[in-house]
Image (cartoon, rainbow, N blue to C red; front, top):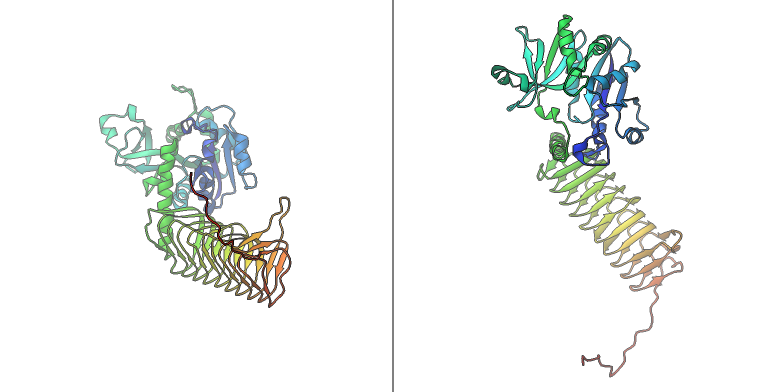
Length: 452
């Protein structure tokens, strides 16, 4: 069976009150539309056609490199009209799965069940809600097939007691869908062509209409305003937290973790409360993440501890390292095994060797630091001259005294010692003590000024 996916993404989204098209609103670190595309990917469709309208160029640009086909709906004339814009790109022997760019949480399993039910029929996705008020009700015949959909305002008291509702998602053979849509009219209050009108046409043609019930009604959560966007975020956050725990990760509080991307974890990983993981994050066996940390696009090897309120961005950390609390690793920070970054230390574009330590209140940028180096508190690599960045190189076993300024470009040799309070702007030889200090003196008899 060949499958084409059509995603309706042309809506303006006025209730968002945003200049950004609705399908580009962020959910879990990615646009709404990205979740819909990703949800259909496991079905291996022959093609995915996205129907765009409002903000079309912005949507195209956001997914410029994705293997998508595009169809434009210049006038917003309803869901049936939107699907008609995509059909010229779809052969008659395909099954068409219609998804919505603002319904981002439908699982691949539910989509697969919908497609499989549509090989010789129309399949509509339904859901059973505790309170179905306002939704169209699904009417089934004695054989369990769908024979109609009645809107809430038109339903009888008995029909309003039905809890199974229409979600709007459906799948159908492309050739038949093309025929039915050509027969759909717009004789309604909105003057629009509704996709759901094909249900009655299919029934009148003797084609079975099968209802596939979503197992979790959170799957059909649509996003039309900021409140619903926050609700969808909570659902997605819960799903991702559950997936981590099913993979063996311990979460101190599953309701207080944000995963905005893809996370790979080894065994016995512990993540404390209020942690944010963004982009592509890899955590090795036994990694411990303290509370309040932010980790973006980073790899952390086995046994490493990240203490509270530490930020890592595009960093790579070796095994059994320790970072934080209150540390910041900026892009290009690469720490070898057993390295130590302490409180209020910031690094950027750094290679920190195995066993090396930068424990307190320091900035190390554009530097290569060897093995077993100790960098004292308050040390700064002065890497920027106002126009260009320059490198600092520190050899294995060097000791950098507290409150040192290393004015790049500069090299500190292996096992060299830099005296505390020094400003080093020339290379320091290996194995020697180098320092720069003005002579200390005491002014005898000096007294502090007094307030008048």
